[in-house]
Length: 550
Image (cartoon, rainbow, N blue to C red; front, side, top):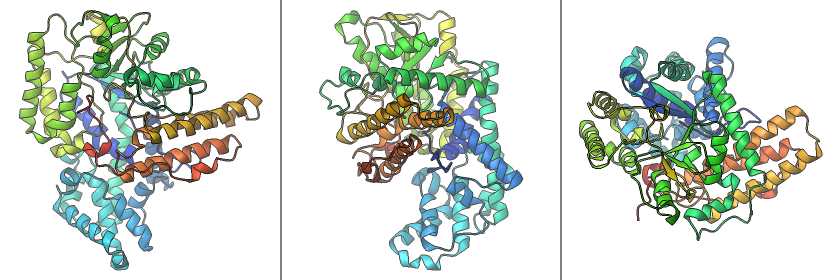
């Protein structure tokens, strides 16, 4: 599970709502499916910067309900605002914010909301008619938007949500406050629910470096060329102080994890499965027992002559001179769940997946560890009912299967599963086995150069010692946010225009905030957009397959 830092750390305002929306839709559903099948097991990874945002949302929403303290997420605040804005532009902004959902699975599922959104589509093209839109229309759009984002397990079990969906229209302020009460309950309990499953041994919790940086690139930008020899690189030769920053993110990430869960995790999912030989060495030195990456990274590595005879892929491996076992994603099976099974009947999809697993058991000798690694949020909105029927059937049938054992990575190592040796590794990520999603085209490279400029300034200011301890801590946190992977993911033409604009603005804001914290004037180029998107990638660009389709 991961979301980047959506807050402007200087004002506290959440610029995008995806953290709380994915909590109420996906993170609560994922844990509910595991709670419903006690024999099921899974590894669940949390990015620390996501955990902190969940914690902050819970604090703010409960503060609003108990003491009417204001909420700093504009969309969530609008849900409970007694006064609907009169300004047509503000109204249209709210309506457009409530159109950001999957049309087929979230919007069209509910005829009343579908009709409201069709009206909103018309209003976008007849802007002068906004003056005739009444407050009830905005109230209903706000209420419906938050209802469609509720997880399926909430819709099936919470009487308030059932009643409000059945009501359909004419939502009052009381109704909207009832919705935020449900949201508060989910935000407050979701981390505790995962913690409870971890205590039972049903779930293994793992961690990602604090702000989700691509560690191999911070360590060595030239590691890009291991899987993409001809990729153009930024003008920046190397990210200054990269190894120190990687260790900072790991240390801060583990501190955050321990504060919320009460123990040090044994495993680390490196951001986006980004690994290299140097990364594995640092993870081992840091005390992690295991890490994981994409199947294409293993495929590229096994093709090196240094690695000799090719073993089967369904094993953990250990790179020589490192102390951490590395598991590799079965890209084919994981991509079936991410991109194909949403179009199938749930029972057929689960049956097909189990058939593949049974074939692996028959045709590969010895112990087999099949790692199916998914993000915890983006796939399910493409499934009917947020994947409810697929996930219910999946956990039930796998947990009761006579020859398939659901387990965790730590249990595999405790049970002495065969760990294969690897002489050399090709650096890469779970996406295509390369770093092409974060570096190697003009816009992504420009982002790295801008980040490098900011880091040089950071180092210069720190070296002269003009910041107080508090200012130093604020600047370090702001730098960490700038180093996150998500900004680079969205840069470039391949992606949809609105998403590129949102993330590019946030990246420039983060960099400008860092300069100001350092007492420096932000460069003029941070006032100007440097990347635009015009693409229409599969699944809106929020997901990638593990294997590049040619």
